[in-house]
Length: 296
Image (cartoon, rainbow, N blue to C red; front, side, top):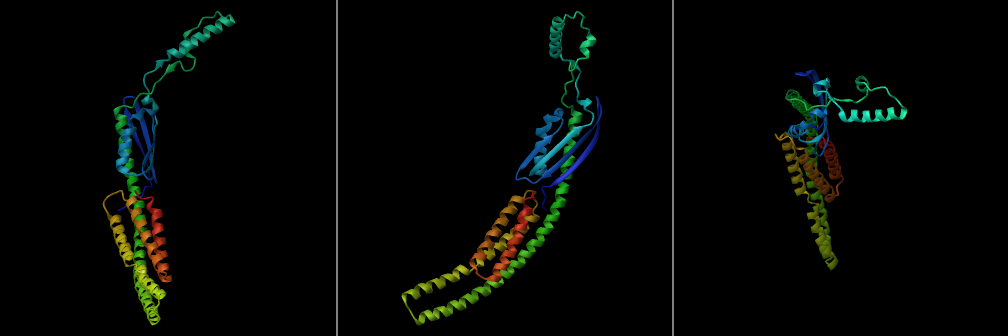
């Protein structure tokens, strides 16, 4: 089973605390990425949970660019006690004293005048209590499971496509194997004819040509490449059904080896039919390599 790196989930939960009721809203989105990266946008009162959230999501999601966005509907439950902003008030008083002196104003300053001024009170945001924190983390867990479910669903579609392409490559490599055997036989026959001609007129140049003809048989033999290609295909099929979650990088490496073997076969055998099947196989491999970038 394989997992895509693309997934999305949202959740809302009503909680009740000593300060009142509120709804926690969270969304979790996962996109392609070589490594695990988390972008976390949550209320500052919950920022101390980011390390816990990072560890939790990395353990579950493994790889990808992950975006977590959270909010709380009733921010009053995160507010601390109201406190006077003494520094601000003192600055106001100094400024008012200067104004009174410069403008010859004798009217006294009343408390009601000060209370009308902006920012004379502070309402600091306190850290979320245990009830809010536990509820928040529980939703994160729930969302991670939902994202994994959507990843598996998309991964199953990719896996079916991979299975079809692998079957096509099995057909192509069998065709290459058959054609390669025929190509080698035809080349042998031609070499034997050339060798007979050389024997009839032995010269030093012909000896060099004879060695070149023998060497040609070794160069056009692609039996090893075909065997390695089949082995890589078998390994690819095993990886697709392996139990481990992270397999995208392994699959990419195997596909690279398949490309290497295909290029070698195409280069060693100057046969149009073999070249056609090699190109067909390479097309399937490249299409798989595009999709494997989205596998965990």
